[in-house]
Image (cartoon, rainbow, N blue to C red):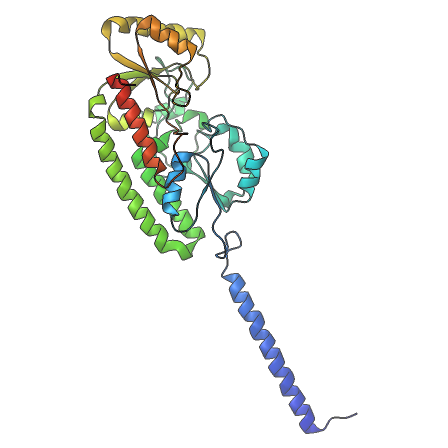
Length: 349
């Protein structure tokens, strides 16, 4: 059967209209999908994982109104020597962004963490340019091996991170206890958040401005609170306060051991006893801090040292495990440390 010329023309235009409509539908769909990030589509809340509670506070403040971060390893103590379990790996693998301190602080989880997630989904704070990093303290009453490279390049035991890679063992990873470092970290985190979720740019920028203002006020507040601690000397079971003490003018002269919970070597213990014996007459070392806020108990070794050398013991919880998760938990953490330091020096612990 042959179609007339007019029928052919009508059929041609009908087909053209159909093809055009289909093309428009396909084009519209491609635009919608192109505007959605494959790692973090706007249709769902960003999945952000943070490894420690104080940093969780910074991230929660920046993402206020956008997302609620997940705290990894919650309630399991310090992440210094914490190993990841299968549920942690599952949480990390599902994240759009993972924010951790870095190998200097979380050495045991470094390898499985890096294996679980892609490089562009991981932000290591110790690699941020501009933060102040101190080398691990060695010599005297600090028994660690340290890193001569860092010590040679430190000015008054202080150097700026310039992108150069250091072995994780050379750096004191408690740099987030320095409020100025916390500000720099907050800015870097905000920049990554905006890059990943540009449609939240205005909210993130406003949150950052509020957070920086809060941190500035916090530094002034704690400086006033710790005026009485300036110039005073203490010992501590684990060298965790270097960044905090340099901000507020007191001094940690030595430690019980390299790591919390580890027994000191015989040689180091004898040096420590010698210093405490001298201090019986001098009275310069005011207090021996220990990580015991959770159960309120010092180790038997510390208890015996305190009794033998008349040194006061005072608990100090720098990771603030007992504080609730919140957008201001960083500020609460540092306020708690300041209160414990003040109480320790004043004999109220």
